[in-house]
Length: 233
Image 1 (cartoon, rainbow, N blue to C red):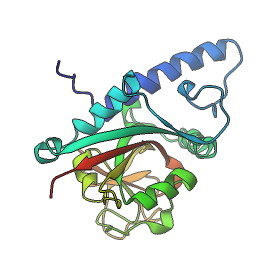
Image 2: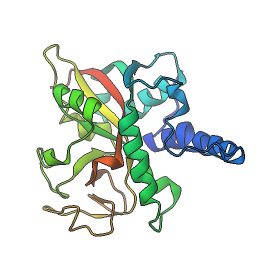
Image 3: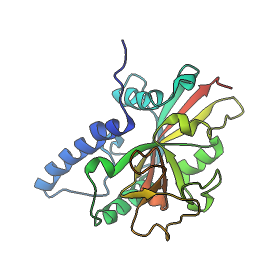
Image 4: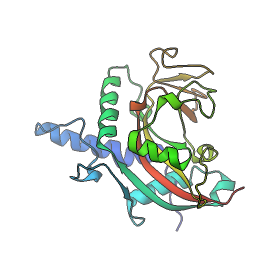
């Protein structure tokens, strides 16, 4: 049976934004709102852990489809997902939610432009550091800065594939991240957090952005690690 195509953005809205807002309304009625509380799926654990997502779960299928359906033809037929893991870091989550709440004072665009699920490809050792410590803006521009000296993300996994280098076993990894992109503008080489002023991110094409650069690590929560094989040379 063919899987229904689900974009990363639809996944976010269906699985997180709407359920979280519904739950928050119920908590607000009871005086129990905690804006820094982690997603319900994390359970009661206070540990920072990485959990393998059950490949029979809806969560796995949604992430898998978000990854698979954003690969173009040549990658889609040569890429096999090995596993998907969820990152549960309470410190990174608090930083992300705190930043998001401060950005809420902006004259926000519609809800669907506040948050996006975006891909980030890099080498396995860098992913291990990101999982532990989060992104580091000081490393921005390592693979180019055509749209500014920010941390880069892509709407489609195909674009991030070129930066996902294999480990010794030949496996690759990619991050699927929650990114608070906020209000964006066209990015140019050399742009920085200071030069973009009140904007929250820069993009390749403001009318139909596929590449985003952000200038504050706290705008990012790395939520999933997708480990895969790619036989495309």
